[in-house]
Length: 258
Image (spheres, rainbow, N blue to C red):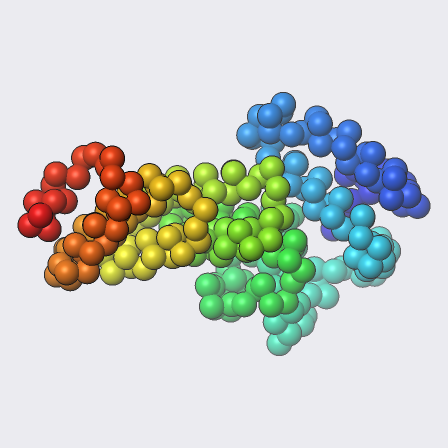
């Protein structure tokens, strides 16, 4: 179990002011604009620690768990593993393993209990769910499970749109999702699934008109290949409506008979 006090460099009886000061000092060191994008992981860990220790109720619960973890007779992971019939314990075990470099064990557990159908969000704090889901998406991409990674990231992005959590990392989450779609996802799914993915992206909102128009064109192309030409034309015209300066669409126009 990670010691948030050690991570921030404060004592266990530190005041809120001390915790805030320590976080700001560490954040300056590990912020991506200074340390580079490769240090995103450290920054997210700092944010997670700060979120817990700056909230009185969450800090009390964390302190209690930390005391138990320090007791050699208590193994938190084993405790969770034994509660096989408790979904909340399973969700916590998945997150624990993701946070402590046991990604393979976390993925196996996640798949055994339903994968995308396992409602991890229901059993975790919002912050733990969002951080854990981001790591889960990264691991899924490493294993070329692009569709599953897309669904996980889209869910995070939807929650981020509703109520920002990642703050200065929000752009990183969005970029991760867009790069996955642009570079990996299309080759991994059939046309029907691609249409669903485009609809999901467009439902999130908040992207540029040009980006959304490109997604609409791609969706139109997939609909055309599925033989749904009227729908494809309607989607294509919508793309032109929101971004009239679209280029490289001659082939699509020809396919649609426009």
